[in-house]
Image 1 (tube, rainbow, N blue to C red):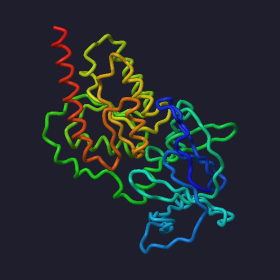
Image 2: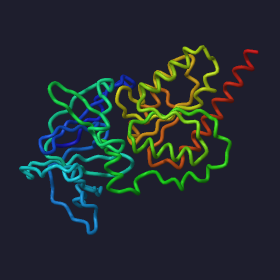
Image 3: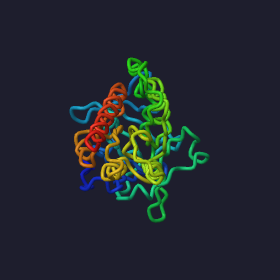
Image 4: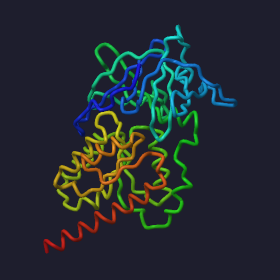
Length: 318
């Protein structure tokens, strides 16, 4: 096995990603390569008392301790036919170290987010479904899993703690228009609740970057020049079907009408490498999803800066 090369995509904002295809009980699933640090052959683990039924235990391959999640058990599928050949997908996102136990690793392929469709909620578990995208590669249908939801279901304390945003309540934020692009039903619900708690109620919650961009284009086509009165800030995830957050950010920041709209990337994938990619496409701020306590403060700061800049620009033109 070994370490996975997560630097394959050299150019940012192309709306592409690398997917690792893996199998569980004969079914094909996918995970963004950006979430993976390593692939390892299955190893003996230390069981943990009173752990969640889908948690096999922990192991420490080197200096880090990893929690092992049995994806087959979580998905309600059968066990591996030959456990000796099973694989651990070692991941680090949302500042957590997790090893996902799967039955086989098939291949890595590059695909455009535009080719990934939102799953039918009736087929894939309603509003709380664990599949965030469907990709067709050749004759295969690959279900891309919502790993944030999986970790939250197993360990709810990894979710957004609304008590951390209570200190931001009371300010006059009610009518400030904010666009949120997030494909995870779970995260959309959490973000909405967090922003509502802090006083932001004029929210447009969209499923992906493509829907956010189409909304902005409708504003442009309306003929308005005061864009900030329509969209004071954009908060976007990175991983989304149809159009990812980096592509959305790049489109906004290279458009003369939209470039002053603050864009905050709010994603489980934020690390040093992703910070560089976000800066490359012009993001005004980037936060990992556990940093919800800082999100409202950053939104406040970005809106004040953009409005001050707009006032200065108008004064200069007068």
